[in-house]
Length: 337
Image (tube, rainbow, N blue to C red; front, side):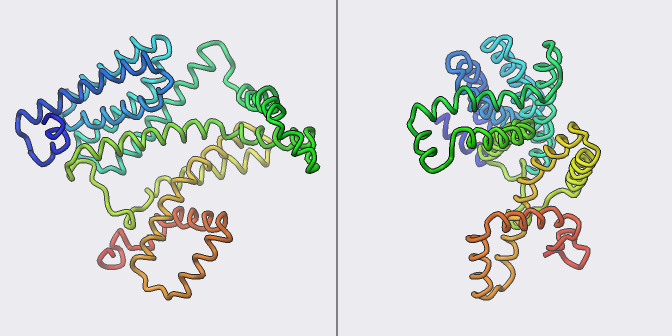
């Protein structure tokens, strides 16, 4: 019965017993995070998503209740993880509180995600500073690059040899030295994007946490969002892409490795976002334009045989959509479509 009250909280309105059941369940969920972190810390990623969801849900009962739940989750993390609790607080509690606060202010789902992503990126930056600077290490990419190469040399290669695949590849003409040269080069290139990979991982947790929280809110006026085919990237993000291009090109031209890596990571982070909104535009076109069968067949063939180029084209659409407004979402050419 309690679960039913929680699941359909939006349907029963402001009944006092439903609100109490909601608060009790959220409080218990917050406590369960601490228990899970204490006895099953290997699943900390899942507890991070749960923390963000719980804090997003807490916003339904106002800033005061959100603050109480944030303190409970934070204290539970400190008791369970001790010295490692800072990372959990920066990467889970802060983004969750940000999303929960926007729930109290009736902001849209898109703005809650942007705020959560921003809080997650800032939290990662602070956590990185703590790991590499406050603990006496230099703020350098050298450690990140060498860790990838060390993993390949001391873990991957021995595992490959033990499995017998090494002999198979050598029989195919791919000797261990050639394989080592290729993969080392690839890993060193990939290592430059490791900050972006970490932030992208954090964004995935924030996205799942907020979306799950939105699902259980069960009230349309909380974190509203338009249909997928009507979503468009915020034009401010185009400036992030421009900044990434500038950093990347300037760093490459004047051999400034740090600027080049900053630009590469900014572009890496913006690519999936632009692709998502480009896909939204594609769905709009397929839904509203009367395309002939042969046109759809050509599109299908291009996607099947040129998937990389198709993804690049969709990403470009997402980048230019805020500037050109293909769908007239701003209503500058008459009534919005």
